[in-house]
Length: 198
Length: 95
Image (cartoon, rainbow over all chains, first blue to last red; front, side):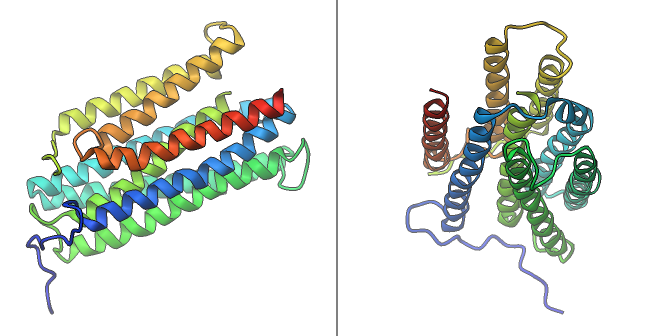
């Protein structure tokens, strides 16, 4: 079986910066605008009517825990990169696995616990008050799908790591997956405040 | 030219602790209302704390602090543009 190279391959560049990394950052910049449009729609809905305060207030304890879960996952993701840079393969894989499990915990709590609870309390996609439900589910669901995408990306990175694809010199794959993962965490940090605390 | 990254685990843990503390204070102020702040001031405080957390993640976990400033520009420009558009639209709606 052919083993993936662990040597750093010189990155293609037109600007002096790795093209792939420029691409990732441009993608994240476009994602900012995407989320901004949904946040704008949510805030406009909020400007038209009060949010269902009691329902949202009840959600805060569990969502606070979920926020903490995502923050811990950001730590494990960045630790995975740090371990890769130190050539500590075992810890790198362990930290990646922890990131995947924490991400899975986040989406499970959101989709399988929180959404059904909110639905049962009357916060639905097609109900009142004033489209709050539809903008809420669209925004948080869109973010949740991003977390799901990040989990899949991290699983693929972990599989590559298991085949020995990363080393002290060659760890760009972990760095790129990490940039996306931290971005998803960063967006949730903003959403948590805007949706649940304000 | 990209600068060398610091892979200091201690620094990452310190940022994580900072994020945890700010989140706890946010929840205490915004949800538990442990201090009775003026609503306008509370909104401002919560937004500043949220921005501080986002900045910590971007600067240290995403390494914008150590990387080329082009990445900061690519990332921050859409933030500023979208914030401007959102505030403009919402204030126009409220006004």
